[in-house]
Image (cartoon, rainbow, N blue to C red; front, top):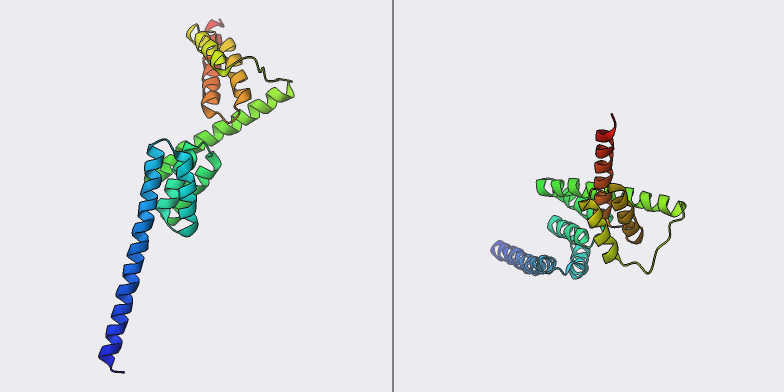
Length: 191
């Protein structure tokens, strides 16, 4: 075969391979963009499913891993979110915003650990759920006690809510805030 023909065949093969690569890359960008749209629409569970499929197909794509982390975070799957962000950073360490997100997520992980520890202590103390009392009622009562600076009572009501929702990091944060306020008010009243 003549060298000119061989060179043309090689160039043709490279162009074809590049075209195929671009085609599949765009398809996956569309899937990634669709997942972001789903998250923005409050449909994070659907985004998780789509992004897990994309991540399986493209395990070295840092953007897919990053968006999967965000979707996991929106569905309150804290550990999976942290793992996905870690993977995204491993693939592309120059993502400062992901580092910041991981710092914030670490705070949630710590809150989650403390919430689980609190609920375990409550169970050990013999706490039981009160089926006749709604979360809405407990929430309204807790808020009323917060407004009246009755921190002990507010803490007990918030703990009753946490007992039912042990993964609720917002409740743990509110309990800890009330505990700090109680401590501060007790220190002020001590001569």
